[in-house]
Image 1 (tube, rainbow, N blue to C red):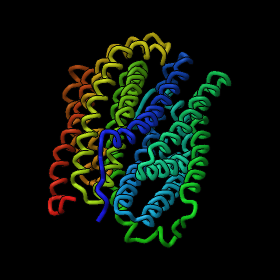
Image 2: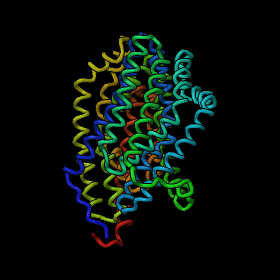
Image 3: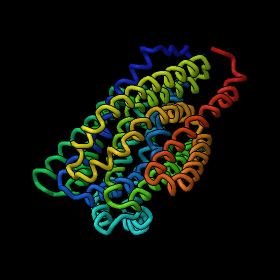
Image 4: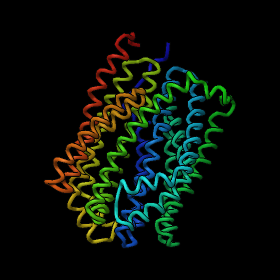
Length: 443
């Protein structure tokens, strides 16, 4: 029998706070990149950075399972007190990341050829996006390995290590972006090279930390890592998370594409506001990550009480933080817009639609927290189905509202996407909990 898991506000926040600090530095990096390119007085470059980032986010979303799936599986192995499987989960994730990274390098030109026309934008925007993406593609093996390492440490409940890894990555990236763009005047290539160097350095740090973590314990052999009975559940989980991530990326890519269709100024303004949403989402992801770890342990140990307590804490803290995020965005948004771009047209346009960015955290927080619950429990098929339904309703809302309200209609449709995803996952969570724990004796 497993030791009873004690889930308290203190233990939950001990995981959530470091990961909130870690995650918040990631969108801050995006803000810095936007700010340094914004100083070049060219809306096309700012739009190109947005489009290039979306293209590379396709890669990140396609392989997001290496972070999310590894966290859930590692946490469940920890809850079941299975040390051998805990180490094997890391080995399998790193192997899949290496293979995926090599594939990305070889497929970068087809991705550009098909991806850029789908998103759209002027020729100047597409040229800048192609330059950014073609450099970033070579960092893919390091990016995917870092996903695996971070996910594994989160599954172990070592949020402090996660904070170290993310902070190391983002600080190096931000410093290099500022130096290469504003000092050496490399423009878009400078931002991409900065990220490449930062990802490579972070991989080195991750390997060092793993060697220290596993000192004195044998790492699984290759034959132990590729056991089909163990790989199959991971691949099924990864398939569902991959589909979910790609559908989400389609939704955000559609948003960017419809922004680009309205001209470079609207594209740039929406890109600036999307950075605000990204900051808020990562701010809220700290509590979701804490839920991943505790929920995963509770499922692995088959403890319903711990599951319910983690669920309540995640949703409660998530809504509290979402109000704080909305408050800050509403009252400080204008000043931040001025910091991110010197283009007067982009500034004025972004202010026109600032309201939508400010309320997005309130509408989206339930979806963010439910993601953490379902990832930790590895209930991946429900995540997949929920995002498909949400995206269909997002598209329906867009085609109804955009002809009438223009860009306001596009933003409202995005809120429909977030809201439906959160509500549908909450509904499914109720039935999943009863199904999984219903026949288990409470521990």
